Length: 116
Image 1 (tube, helix red, strand yellow):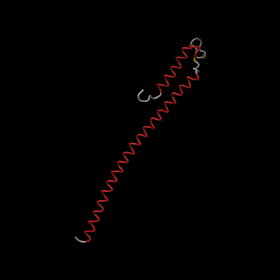
Image 2 (cartoon, helix red, strand yellow):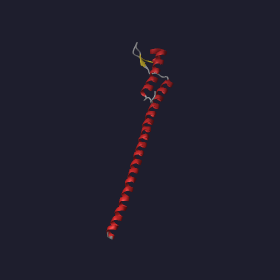
Image 3 (cartoon, helix red, strand yellow):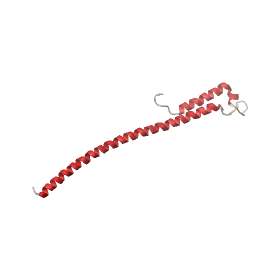
Image 4 (cartoon, helix red, strand yellow):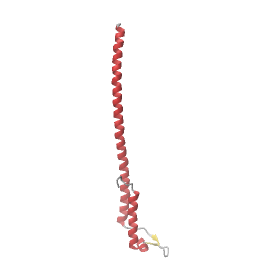
């Protein structure tokens, strides 16, 4: 074999080793990319849950504020059509039922966490 052929053979062996190294590195990078994508999906899910939790908190707080203020809306009287307080028109039990409905609406409107 000539010196030129031996040099080509040596170069071919080096290139073959380099190819194997690059293929292994590529496979490792693919695995790292897959792991990173899986981790990113976990973070995306955590973010979605945080947004849902925040929405739930806001809806529950709105219901609690309305109950705390205990100011039911003015309603149209069934007798003469004038605007009267809710308590005058429906009594204290009517007010209580109104605010029960406010609480129920807040609880039902808010997305329920898993397990409830």
